[in-house]
Picture 1 (tube, rainbow, N blue to C red):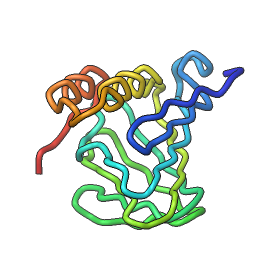
Picture 2 (cartoon, one colour):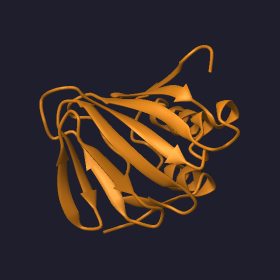
Picture 3 (tube, one colour):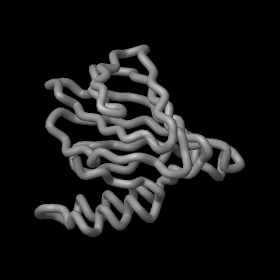
Length: 143
């Protein structure tokens, strides 16, 4: 990817480093920057891809398969497809982590579609958010 693409919504920035088109669909790689107090996606699982997270800055709180895991800089976490997970920035500091998704199904269009709904102003349309998640193979879990 010649120019890094940055997608912003609701206190979150997604910096795409490698899109599926860069890797023959083998993987996608992007950095998430989460500001304190940002609303994060509902607990969900991925139908068709695995996700590996590598913490760069701050402490990210993940809940994976019901277990709470604190990721500090240098920590990593593998989340297999089908495993319910969520994350949050519970601190007063910026957090950053890299996400590696394999195969390369987590495309920038997912975040662009989410950003369009979140950045529209007012409370987000939860039905539309769920529709976008399902379209891209992310299954929200009410819990």
